[in-house]
Image 1 (cartoon, rainbow, N blue to C red):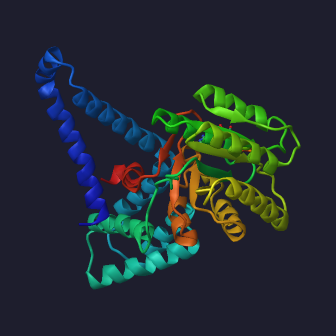
Image 2: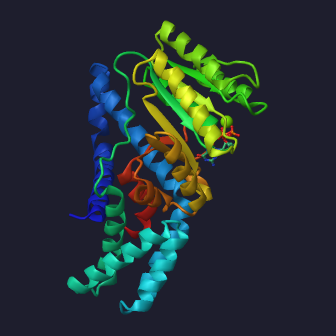
Image 3: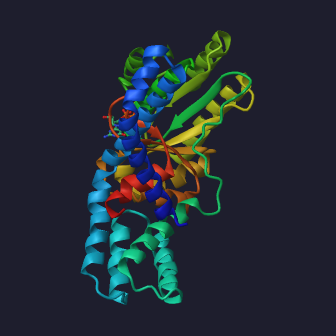
Length: 359
Ligand SMILES: Nc1nc2c(ncn2[C@@H]2O[C@H](COP(=O)(O)OP(=O)(O)OP(=O)(O)O)[C@@H](O)[C@H]2O)c(=O)[nH]1
Ligand SMILES: [Mg+2]
């Protein structure tokens, strides 16, 4: 079964289950009256959360959907016969969704081949094939994991890097909140000592979500602040350390040296740390974000991407470009400015959010 059909069935099932629930309501009240069934309640809560998450993807990707998918639907509605012109228009739509020129060109080639060999003439079927093929780009040839590599022997260190204004500090706040809700203790370390106000911004987040917080003086050496923070977290038995860094665009050599120094300090205190170096990219910057990622990939070991501001862009296709051009997993996506507007990246919900009008 293709990915398109799989996701379609998955979300259809959800709707059916929902209806079942209403019928079962009476039964549920009886159970609740007898004894508070904790497991049932937990399940219900999880399901409610799941619904909220789907809604978040749905709303967060609405701009992309309106732009990219509606164009696709309109093209298919206009088309009577699959011709070269059709493929040219399709190519334009995909390039405008920021999937990346090379990715689009090879995709179109593959699609043309399939149309020929399978003798496809039905536009509805072709639509499904397009979605399938797009997601094969994402799933192909790689270990897909959105999981954070937690350290079983002590604090897990996650370093956040990325250029100015992409959303590093906000993402730390959101991830801290998520981890704390899961029962983990979290410390934030203000490794951005460069920008005025950066330390306070992170401190505010720490208060908001109830995380520990370590800072140094503005303008001080980030590595020394990081040293203090990691040492303290170790002593206090903190589960996860989230380290903010400065986003100023500096030359490659300096950035490399600074990151090397930070990594050395962290590694000297905790073996195999940092467990994760997450590169934060602003989805609204499109191909520019891809170049930033290439740049960072050359100077340090990036273990995952946080793609922020997907809610603010019509270019949701950037997820595919990241996979094709960088082969680094997207671990989290930012879908708004609020504390709960962050989710672990889930390819199925993403497909649903992007293509639901076609399903
Ligand atoms: N719409 C939207 N806005 C976001 C998202 N993530 C972050 N932002 C906003 O982006 C702006 C910049 O966020 P910061 O967290 O300060 O970015 P930063 O990378 O720490 O910036 P510097 O410290 O200056 O390098 C803020 O106004 C955030 O609210 C997101 O997922 N969606
Ligand atoms: Mg910041």
